[in-house]
Length: 501
Image 1: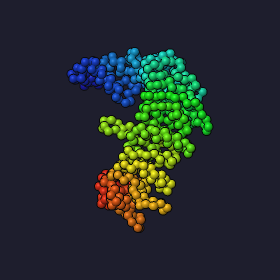
Image 2: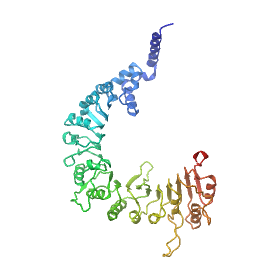
Image 3: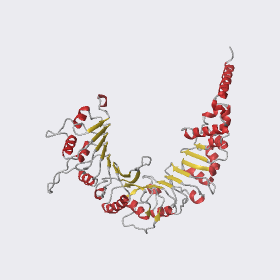
Image 4: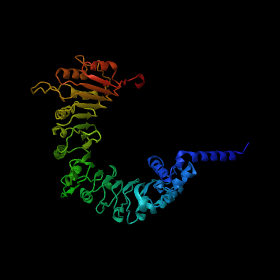
């Protein structure tokens, strides 16, 4: 019997011969190289380890090692094995690099020092690290980074005795995307590259006092960025004190497509006073703290101007309110026009006075407290006369009161009326019926309220045509039969089982 070593060598020889005869082995090197590059770009997890394809055969390995583009994605960490980083640097030749540095603990390995001289050819640079690594970055970064297009810096420690100053010391003429998370800056002097089209700055709600800046300094920074298309500011603006004012410095952002501001409402409105941008710009406001009633007027005016310039036909209400202009072309995406989230009631005194005649679809994804906010919901619904599709998702059945006839107050005159007179389609998804059944009413004097609403609407000529029921586990086949007397029902058949109890 031959030794095991000889057997293994024989097996490898057979495999090598089979590989040489395989059709893919006859591909020209330039085509095989492109296949390798596509594989490397689409495979997740291929960080610092050599791609497995380099170990298939000698021919594949030769092609891979001679393809610098295959080695341009370099990941640096505290791993003690520095050989992969060194190999990637060598094999990438002088090609532009995509570098990801993640060092959140000490000690720092030689991988950090290996990559620093190569940052001059970085096209993408993502750093998630402690302050000492950021200080190394500032020390070793060249006076110019001509290839750098995307820069993300995430400071992972909670020390603030450091101010990042690379933007004043290094030219980045090609930079178009910048994201700074928990990074202290000298806001009074910082100047970002005017080539930026995407700027994201996040201070974090818990660290904002150490990281935030005044509206005046932020406006000065934005003024130097005429090409901005996307702007996101999270907890980075100092709250505006009552009575505090500053001269309006108009800044025109003609190419802006999206802006998101996370700040107290007064601060957000004050910043918007400085900025002008196209009506097509998507505006997302995430307000912190309770709303001062005196600010509802300016906020409503800003919202009305925005909605007047866009044909809003879709509204979604949950923890936020989203106004969407849907595209008439199947291949074109819908366009978000305005989104607002705040602490407290988002309806009262704000949306109840804004006409929205073009809205044809309304999505409600939160419970309606009929004792506290039913009046506001009714007022809002009356401003949506052309809604033909209404969706309730993950709410209590109390919300279905909007389908029932509305009884005028005793002191007023008039017949009961119905909200959404053109409503034809209702979607119920993940409805929490709280033990109620459509087929068995808890009301001794009549039907279950939802079934009663379907019947009365049909009798009054504003009947609903279709009800779609999805993932409502408490709905049973008997309930569906009761509803089918008045509407067409599309039901996914999901019912509550014994195991669900």
